Image 1 (tube, rainbow, N blue to C red):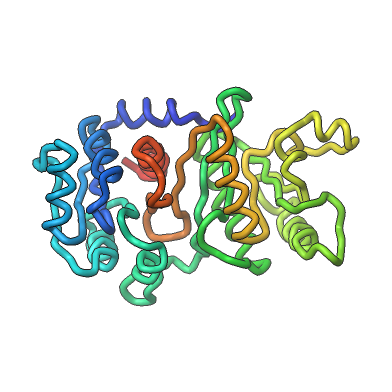
Image 2: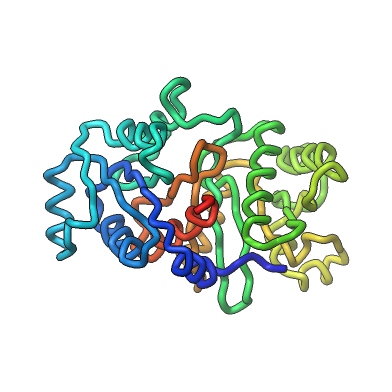
Length: 297
């Protein structure tokens, strides 16, 4: 079974109307305000905007949106304030707004006051390609620069868990590299082999790698190369060997393909709605729908 589509995630949230409190780190962002106004109208969210109150109020007014739906917390340190709202139970989700990633992650990763769980925190993006009726996850596209074997395995496990929650009974995880052949000159192929050795036959998902992108995406590529396996042409998720390859791949698809996408951080104490400050309103709404699907209502 393929992953749920964004339309299906929207329909689920519309039906459940969970009204989840969302703490936003850096609420003075027009697309964040627009997205939360829509998700609040639909009954998905109750936004709490952290940041400079005067700027937040100016953005709300400039967008022609009623301020009634927003709680504003005036803060010189919006990431710290937003994380504290999650820690004290006032918020169920954390959302990245008009704030740099390092500033947000410093607050999230603080040993005593952050949202650490002991697991590797990673960004997972869900990508939907309508023309091919394909949906798949990509990780880690935003946090861990060069994961070691232990971190990579935890990223695989987090990605598989998300895929299962989105409808895949036994997710097919492709471990990505530039080639499907082991090579001393390409350490990412050796990383894939190590992941395979650790996880094959001991997990409730399927792992295959190293695989190049064409093999993970296209069954025709597998046929031409005379290769087979559960993930070839049918990967529910692609886990990359480093941030460089993951980030370049996901942004190349985002900006050149006819696609839909949204993302979150996994591995923290709550789902974190986490995308680029350059992303548009609908991407933020999709990311919220994805994060809401990972809560218990």
